[in-house]
Amino acid sequence: MSDHPWVRGFPGGITVTDQTGAILELNDAAAAAFQKEGGLKLLGSNVLDCHPEPARTKLRNVMARRDANVYTIEKKGRKKLIYQSPWYRDGQYAGFVELSLEIPWEVPHFIRE
Image (cartoon, rainbow, N blue to C red):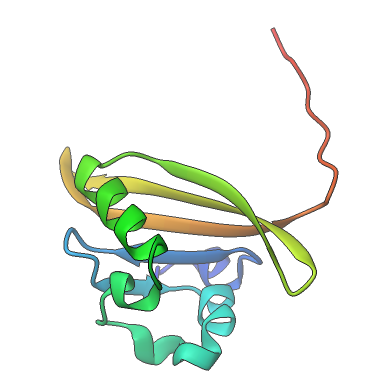
């Protein structure tokens, strides 16, 4: 994982893949969230293999289009924001990052000008 200690200890899950979907990095929260599926043993495996249909096809399409994919889920009684976005190295597409953040059921919304 990153050389920055804050990344490893960040309370939200961070998963980083390469262009093909191979998992390059998992921070501690992501490894814990995916413990049942193997946790850190998932490094090197393909993120698409971790998703059942129809989520697998949707993620494959998002990755092919290099679009951000943002949604919320409820899992184990908790609400999470999932933010999947392409990342770039030296201006070239390098893969995808997924952030999984636990959020309150009601989230304040502010309009700032």
